[in-house]
Amino acid sequence: MLRTSKFRLYPHARQSKTLNDLLDLSRTVYNAALEQRRELYAESGVGVTYTEQSKYFG
Image (cartoon, rainbow, N blue to C red; front, side, top):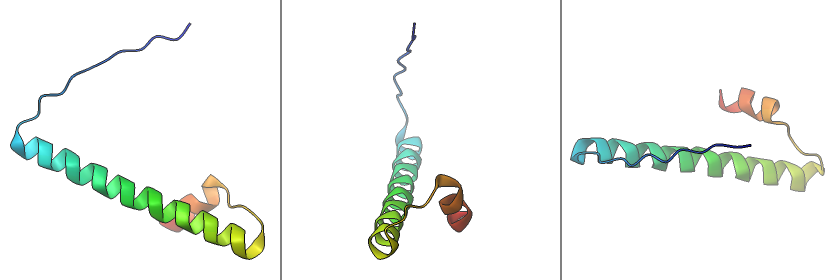
């Protein structure tokens, strides 16, 4: 059985800006990683593992 919890956030203006900046950065990194995976697969026909890609971005 899975249990879930919901939490509501009520950030003030500075916290809200920080959260939005963090989400923007996360989205940018995710999209860059996805683009890299797609390009590598298109070029070589072989996928890249999470560990290999993590080393590149780390």
